[in-house]
Image 1 (cartoon, rainbow, N blue to C red):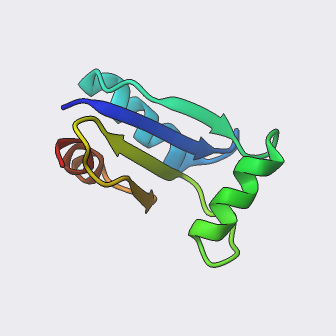
Image 2: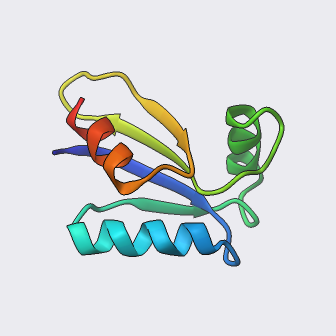
Length: 85
């Protein structure tokens, strides 16, 4: 599994903390962007979620030419599957 994982989150999001701990446990590296501190990222999250700032929103770009995937509140299994694509 390789590729880039970007997690859009907030400091208060319990779902974000849960997914981060799962990714850490599995050794999956990710870039975390706090949408409260980055208006451009907040706008990306809104576009991905019908105008809502729903987090975690995760962007996975697989290496090897696969199609990038944006997911809202994904499970660890969904992130792993997107990385394997």
